[in-house]
Length: 190
Image (cartoon, rainbow, N blue to C red; front, top):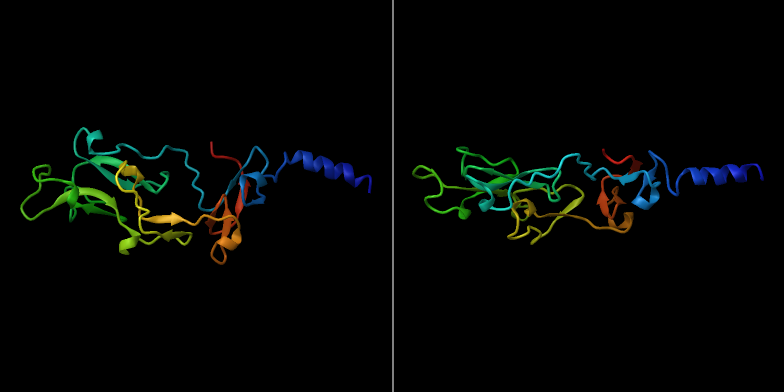
């Protein structure tokens, strides 16, 4: 018994107060201080979010469009470009975005007769135009009105939790929100 106690004690000190690399975790406190707790839906970006503009006034020419950006908080970044139209030219929005023709005025677009033009905005889950992931819920009003274009969202919100019981069957609570599996202690991205 005395031989194993010092070994157990040394192993506890060697862990730095938490689990080591590759161990299962639910929160940062579960990992030693050199590691992070990362769940499958935690994005580890090594680049800054795409925030070229907050509004049209930030663009030297053209308009401020919402674009897909996995490193932005809501999955939406921003980019200056020519006006989009309701078909494909001169500029078409991405798959999960739509051309909002209500945000431009006559004379601001070089559109031909019968063509409308506007700016790209996220399609909304509340309109059944966008499907949230399995770990999100569609919430009316979660699209942030006004403010910076890169703060727009598809209307999906993460499910906040304090334990696995707050999540759907088969999901785990990691870092305070429901994810498709448990977290893992790992080195932070460099």
